[in-house]
Amino acid sequence: MTILQSNSDEATEQLGRSLASLLHDGMVVALQGDLGAGKTVLSRGIARGLGVDAAVTSPTFTVAQEYELAGQRYFYHLDMYRIDNEEAAVAFGIDEFLFAPRAITVVEWPECIRGLLPEGPALLNLELQHLTEESRLLLLPERIFHQLQSAGLPAGVVRRQSEGEK
Image (cartoon, rainbow, N blue to C red; front, side):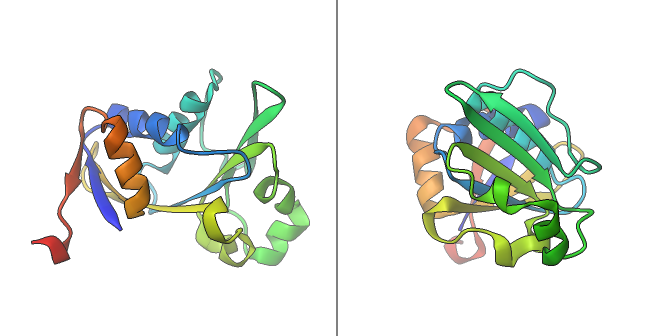
């Protein structure tokens, strides 16, 4: 895993825009992190990078937000914070969002439904950690970091050394 540090909400949102360019239909992005870690800010950036102009807020009380993209495609933004277990998620119809072939799905609080998430390259696991009011860490797979790096990291985002690299 690679660790990136974002020093502002704007940089985190821009990082989300950059991530969006690496995603393809059928992918699920699992965003793990505590309250206030920046999951919704990163989700908004992904949405913007996919072409969503509408307001993007946390769907904590609605569980799911659906945004139509160009070409009859969709961006689904899910928040599993209030879902008690996998059975409740299945009853809610979670599989329609997780296995939609013409959509990209972002799931906040994925640990609540870990056993239901797709496996393999269709799943991108990211973890956010709150550092200060504005700054946060993002842990992401090395391959994703290299793709982001080749395109250029957004201003305000830097790579941090992991303990093993020091």
